[in-house]
Image 1 (cartoon, helix red, strand yellow):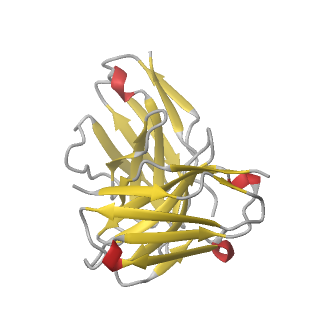
Image 2 (tube, one colour):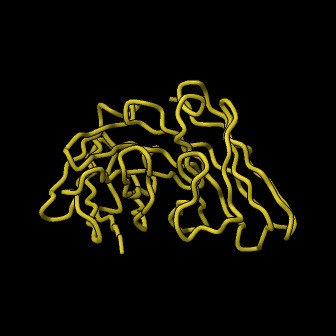
Length: 110
Length: 121
């Protein structure tokens, strides 16, 4: 199982929108509608942000949205805020009750 | 509310076996669809899924680490125990305990604070 591919870093100014991509294969992202996204601030545990490709758990801001096309999933953050600066990880179900994470993306709010 | 907490040794020697316990509250492993799993993160690196146990005692492991991992549960005590054999310095990481719901649909929706484990002689 290879890790999903994410850009190492993205950046944006307050108020702007950014998108983080997550590329997998037909064995994971492309087959299952089961991509999830996690936000991690320094020295903190990850926080659950998106599941089943595009669903938001209760309490997560609607500025966060997920989408998918083929083997690539995406996380979009609109109206960027300083508190959004963090690492973001995608995760996909890979069949047979196994999961694979992405390499992580550091979001910098300029 | 759902909480999870990892406990175990902060330091293990190479070749030793690591044993971590996840103690949780706010949910039960008697409940259909519920799972408890483990994810690790080496310092400055990405998350890696390790293992998951479901309410029905089905167990699943990372294919690359399967032969070193064991996960068990004590439902009455609200505990899940994770072991990893033959520890190596590359296994130095923060180990997180996680909650999952509705089988594979809602993975890792709650996380423990993490336990840093260093492998060194």
